[in-house]
Image 1 (cartoon, helix red, strand yellow):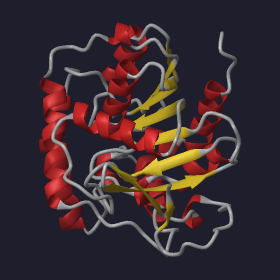
Image 2 (spheres, helix red, strand yellow):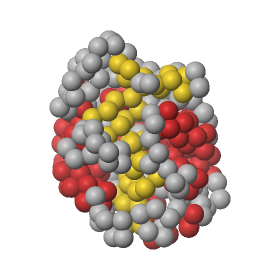
Image 3 (spheres, rainbow, N blue to C red):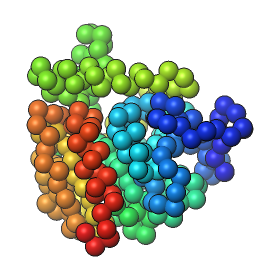
Image 4 (cartoon, helix red, strand yellow):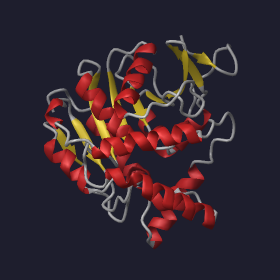
Length: 296
């Protein structure tokens, strides 16, 4: 059973992600922290799989709140990330196994997945290996194993982290957004939204976990090209047109090679954080996809 970390007393359903209580569930003796939001119905929940170095507080509240207006949404820290226990694996496949254990620990037999960047790598593995568990998938800012440029993420990330440190800015302003007037404005707005939650914030990722994630991403980028024909679920694919971290050509490749892939036209003047920059449009498109009839 999962329970609030702060109090065993019942907690009212939160009205927004910034108010969602942080809970934990034990998975083979390891506590995984998570937050849930949205209607508690018998519908299929949507599980969020986040990006490199992200913790619970790095999901854009506009995206989570928008999705949770009609869907049960669950965000969590995988093993060793943020406030979750354990050691972070250094392969995407092991991260996927941990995510499946977490989902099953919550008692779910069927879920939808939204994977962003590294989370999209994990979502692909889960969809291929656990076809009975996964109904539909949304992939954002991500690419297949062996995709062009993915093995360069480490160098790019470290360079922009240094740039952020020297300019006293959040590195995501450089990594996730375009260097245009519009992109810089959207980057600042996104970073401000991430500060809206003021209580019970998550722990930052540790250096050890960050290094393990970088190693896993590089391995993913150096793998042989993925066999995407193993993924039979409907998959919605989205990204900005100028993604520097996972080059946007990977998005087009995913949509073309997935048997039931569907492409959202690439967001203009947007990068890796395209779904955050165009959060209203993305939420509407994602909900339409997730709520489509089974034969659509």
